[in-house]
Length: 366
Image 1: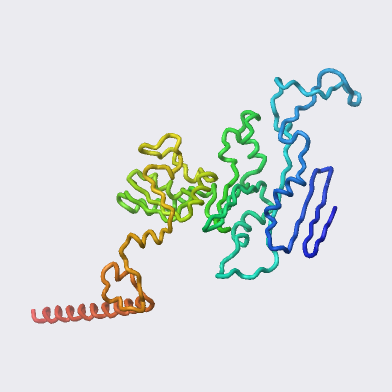
Image 2: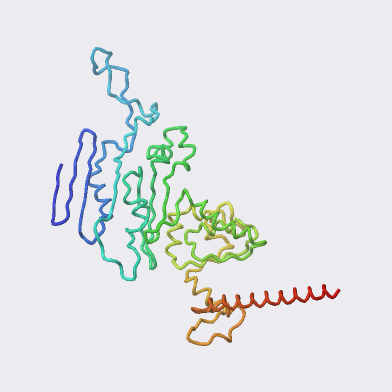
């Protein structure tokens, strides 16, 4: 065991050489995150065994060259490569690293409010958890508008690193994991400014519920607008409707779309939906001929194209009428409208009473 202290920061590690285990703890009061040091720690301390990542054939039991107790002579010569079939128990695994990152102490609030990236969901769901069997940063990109983070994780309740490794090692022969690798992939999670957006294991359920109720409520949807949708999954679900001729997706962050193309291809996979002149190699929903992708502010785009005047609550808006008047409401006007509706209701009730009284008089005369 070893501990090093520098002012308010420290590093400590403990080793169990026989078991091949080492634990490391880093603590700093500095302003910078320790996340970039995770790769350095892996490189320096996760020392692989000889032959890690390969198969070590067992010794052959034929021939001479040694004894083991009073038994027959044995050799340590591995079988020939042509006759050896890899077995899972012969695999020499690379070092397996579990890590956790947490923020402690107090920090001044941000100007304008809000939270820091590492004070949001990404820490609670991924970074701080030491029980995740697999945790890998896939992408960390800063755009003009936001910080985009993508992580691969394996929840121990739903899978294991061992099952995942079986699914990607065809040399093990016919295994259940090898036949169904899609069931054992890590869950890929997407965060924007540290706030969770979607995940591989919940992508379909979330976006189907987001899109289809509104689409089915329309008798014949042909033109659809999507505000945001940089992952491409909302676009994917809309394009499943054959009546749709044109989808205009207005996303302010082009970097988000590029990250989705590279690291989230499942979210925008339209390989079974492509129509028109698109080639077979173009499987992304972003490339569907019915889709038009605009990289600009969606609110500004709508305001530029719909002729609703800006509301100036210091001026008299009484000259407006119809949809423009409904669009332009200032503080207090809703209460006035409610009061007016109440007066109208009272007038209607009085009219109904008068009509009823008139009917009674007619009945009496008859």
